[in-house]
Length: 227
Length: 349
Image (cartoon, rainbow over all chains, first blue to last red; front, top):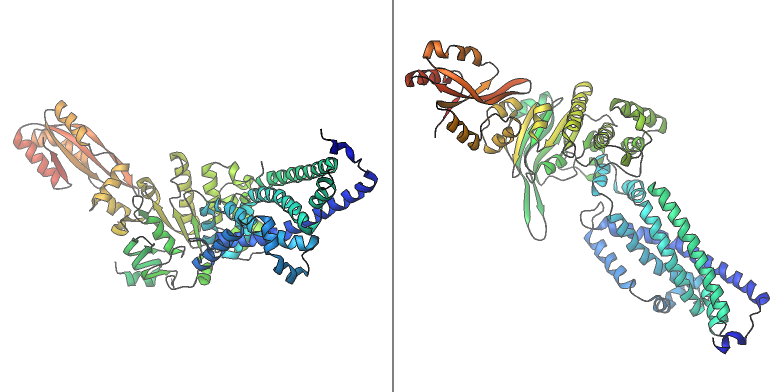
């Protein structure tokens, strides 16, 4: 054990309200990102799936453009993506500092990640069921909403649960570059001040949070899959 | 028959020199090659062929799941070859379809599956519910309405498929290899149901299959498809009692195993000293009466050594292999008298 570990006694009377506030901030950023990134990613993933060759909205140009854009954005490390999105963030949010600026970059990052997960889950749907829906007279939009999404719901829920953890990770990175939240809190009060106790408590909070969401996701997916 | 005469009377599906070409970056494949045929209202029309013959493509042209490349395809008076996709959707409401793998929606209950086409057609919930109950009663699955498809057996799944296909009371039902994934007993159960659909509801059915038994059991007329072309078509009995192509002949041999194979013939010739002949049996031939005179008229004794008699479309049909013993002249005259009423083929070593 290093001396640093014992050097500063944590003042929990001061730290606890900060911990609570930052936990809420993280939850706020993650939930808002999950909602907007989730919806945008769903739309993008559905488009990727339905515009591919032989699918219900087959369109080579749209598919290739989307596919290339997703492939370009997805491999960019999130910390660099935030920096690169700076000018756009100023246009849309007005600042690059604070939770809302972080959310903007997180939504962009999450959208592209989720798009691939959605596409991959839709690919597993039996094409025969889509044919049956077409034979019944259903159009592409009806097929998307009444067949594709319901048929893939279980795996989609698990996919979103998986993404949730990725977004928590993003929020910590975003915190480090001006976003606030648990990541920022752990770095400012834990890492920078050699206060391992704070860092440790933040880890526990995040682990509990992720476990709760994973549990909820599994439960919902089981309901959707009726297993 | 003249196809234009039929069109006035009751033709529901008319192919006129229809072709379907698939173009990929690597190659051009002609799946359907100049097919002409007409399906009459109220009949069960079979299309039989080996896998890769183009059967599934042929049936998908009818409801526009695949689009015609050339030729004219008329369904219930409408040219589906030139229709827009949005108009085709309305046509599809009047055409049911069932599939080899049933293609039920796993995210919906049995009732939800059957209700799906009704939702598409814009029915109100109360009307949907009563129609679904009526259909499930018709296929005998009313008690499984709230189960999910993964709880059902193959035969039950196909019955749900049939109920779903009939939901909007279509005049035409397309059955794409609808019994190929089922065991023989369940196949018969589903075929009986299709027959009931045809007879009680007056639904015209196009049955696509590679199983001769399916055609023999329920079809009125049949087309034999090979490499995207129709090589034979006509009434089931006519085509199969008098096949003109090797393909048709092979299909018949899968259900009527009454012709001895070369191996059987070797054995028969080793174990029987007399002359061996195959005699074709058909409805009006009184073979017993004819043979009862064999000895008195020709001095010939006979033995039945192979063969069988079955039925196609409720008409007797088959072949018997006979060993004939007697003076050469007598055997010749017996063969000649049989040949005057049916086809006789002598087996020589």
